[in-house]
Image (tube, rainbow, N blue to C red; front, side, top):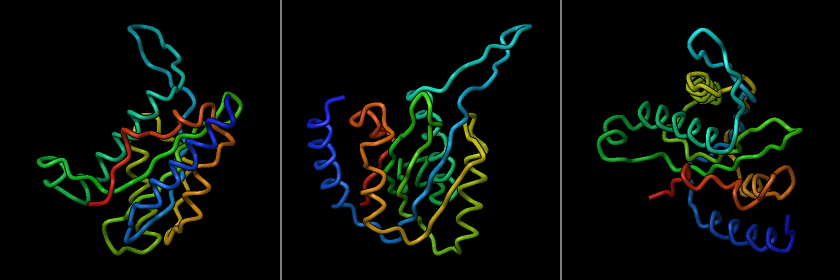
Length: 166
C-alpha cells in the first residue's frame, strides 16, 4: 500500500464524484456472501468471493433495478440509474459495497428498502445484511472513499458499475 498514492487518488476521486448532481440520492450498503457451494456433478465445491465476482454480482443487481424502474429504456437503450459503487473488505472483514444511488422515483424509505433488499436477494452473492439511508449528502462520498478497510484503494472503485447522471 502506497499511502501518498492513495491520498492523491482519493482526492481526484472525491473531486470527480463531487461533480455528480444527484436529485434523489440514497446511501446503500450491500454485504456479500463470503463463499457459496456450487454443485459440480456429484460433489459440491466451495467458491470464495473475489472482486471480479463481486462486481459481476453488483452488475446483476443494477440490471434488476434498472429493468424494474426504467423498463425498456434500460434493456433496449442501455439507460442506467446513476450510481457510485465502492467495494470494501479485507481477508478479515466481510466484503460489502457502499453505493450512492440517484433513486429514480419518489418512494418512502420503506419502499426503497424493500426494492433494494428484494433485488439484492435475487443475486447469487447477495447476503441479508443491507442498509439503506435516504437523503444522503456529500458526507457519504467522503465516507465511502475512505482509504481504511480497502485492500487497494484504486481497485476498490468499481468503475464498471458506476453510471453518471445525464
